Structures are given as C-alpha cells and as structure tokens.
Image (cartoon, rainbow, N blue to C red; front, side):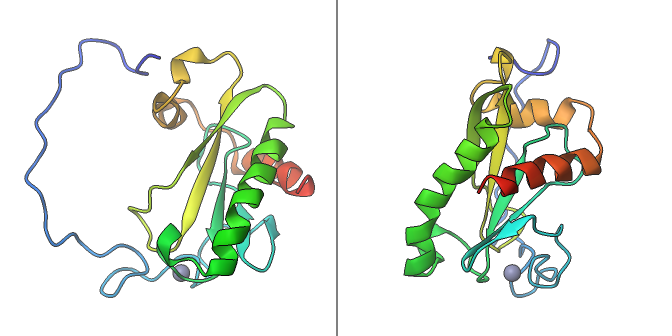
Length: 163
Ligand SMILES: [Zn+2]
C-alpha cells in the first residue's frame, strides 16, 4: 500500500471545524439535487428501488455508483423495502464487476459529503495493483489519467447487462 505521491509529504494540521456544516446538494439552502433534477449521468440499469450509473471523468472502467430512487440521505433513511433489497443487490453488482476480469477486488464506499441523495460507489481495484489496496484506491483513481466517459459508460453497460 503506497501513496500515489512521491516523498517527502508532510502531515498538515486539520483546520478549524465548520459548524454548522454548509448545505450539500439536495439539502435546504444547497444546490438542487442532481439526481432529482435530472442532472446526473443517465442510468445504465434500474429497478423499483435503485438506479446504477457510470461516473464521468474517471480513470477506472468498471467504476459505478448506485443511487436510491427515493430522495433520502443515508442507510438509516431508506425505506424498509429498499434497505432489504440493498444487500443482495450489492452482491450482484460486485459479481458483475468481477466478471469484467482483471479485477482484484471491488471496493464499496458511501461518502455522502457532496450530495444528500443516497448513493454508493463501487470501485474495481485492478488485479495485481497492490499499491492501491485499502483506502489508497480512491487516491490512485484520482491521480491516474482519465479514460473517456464513453469507455466508463461502456463498462457500466456491460456490468448492467449481467444484473
Ligand atoms: Zn434527490
């Protein structure tokens, strides 16, 4: 596990806390919700509870994100039906990403700091890319050269076809 940067890096001090935090997209006082206003990338798959989307401006084909159809914030806000459907669907998405081949592991992340509409990221760690293990994968994803959005969408469509 290695940082995608060369030494020397220095640890900086955390800034002062900002409370209350500024509103996120989709919160009162914030920008409109991208998903609810139709501004998000077009879904490649959906069922009654969730939709699956490719990222834009990414470096790792097979990277996808899953969003709830209902505008809710987090796991604890999902309807009981959507919450119940989530686990089995995550397993299906993981299997569909692994079937792309050349994937060592699928990392699943829920951040939620940008938008207040429930969404979870699935990121394929390239097989053998051991420096990108654990929390290094999003850093590597950020610094590696982007592939085309078309390539990201095509990979997402292959994954969707396996669901
Ligand atoms: Zn929304």
